[in-house]
Amino acid sequence: MQQPVGEARPQSFDRVLSSMCTDPHPAARAAAERFLASNPGDPGTYGTVADLESDAVVALGELAGLADPNGYVTSGGTEANVQALHAARNLADATDPNVVAPESAHFSFTKAAELLGVELRTVPTDEDHRADVDAVAAAVDDDTALVVGVAGSTEYGRVDPIPALADVAADAGARLHVDAAWGGFYLPFTDAVWDFSVEAVDTLTIDPHKVGRAVVPAGGLLARETETLDALAISTPYLETPSQASLTGTRSGAGVASAAAALRELWPDGYRVEYERAAGLADWLADELSDRGHAVVEPELPLVAVDLPDEAFGALRDAGWKLARTGSGEARIVLMPHVSRSMLTEFLADLDRLA
Image (tube, rainbow, N blue to C red):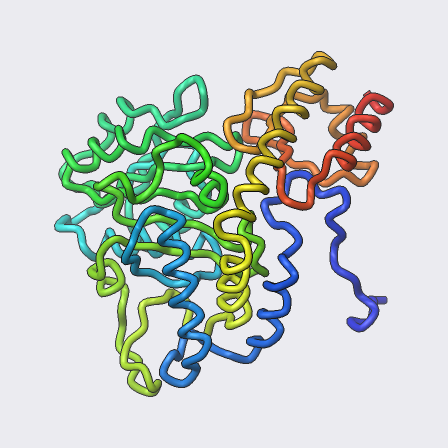
């Protein structure tokens, strides 16, 4: 018998280690509740939430190095990546356009290519799990509409060499998209070159509902030029607003308002403090796991990939730890805001006991 909705309780984050979602900021929760019934897909009618979306886009642009950004709050990284390819396809001067992405790219690009009828060319990463620039250069041709770079990969937290990929894209006459869905809220506090400061970057994905601590769903698509959204726009004759560039029609006012609220509360100092906390925790955890004899992928951003024996991995899962693997089999531990040192100390104690 199903549990009554009124008695159901959401998943606790107490033992969640591999998810890139986290507990929203209190201000984001409150803002989401206030705008539950608002639809930013119809900004002519719902003007207040439309203004909040503009605020969120401006704040995301500042975070990503773009003073006058175009874009909108999406349902997540998947929609943003689909729309980046959608715009590139529509703007391409090619009969059979293709997109070139490293094998570390998010699976949403596979969805996007299938939906849009675009060939996806996946190329190898190098020995440190970053895009192999020579392989990308060999894969592009005159029909390449988009080159993809990843800034904070979901499996290893790696940042691709975006300036080098920009050169490849420029030489091919292709657009360049950076997927910083998870990494984008950490990267402003590092030395990485990943954002619109690279002149050839056309579009960028960045998700407030991850490290940004907005409620789900709240992703982000940013574009350098207005032509990107123009390439996505369709006529909406029965709405107060004459056109719409988003993929979905009715959208979550809760996500939009919570993104604006979280950014207002936390950018930049709150996010800087969180990055420093998470980065220190990742280094500590990597050392602890290495000292126990486990092979660890050296963290670049706050994500630790570790090779655990199958029996230990299964036993930890049975003990309630929410763990997932990379495609190569390592356990992924993502140092999200809800992951504390005390939680990881308990995890290590269970690992010692169960292993």
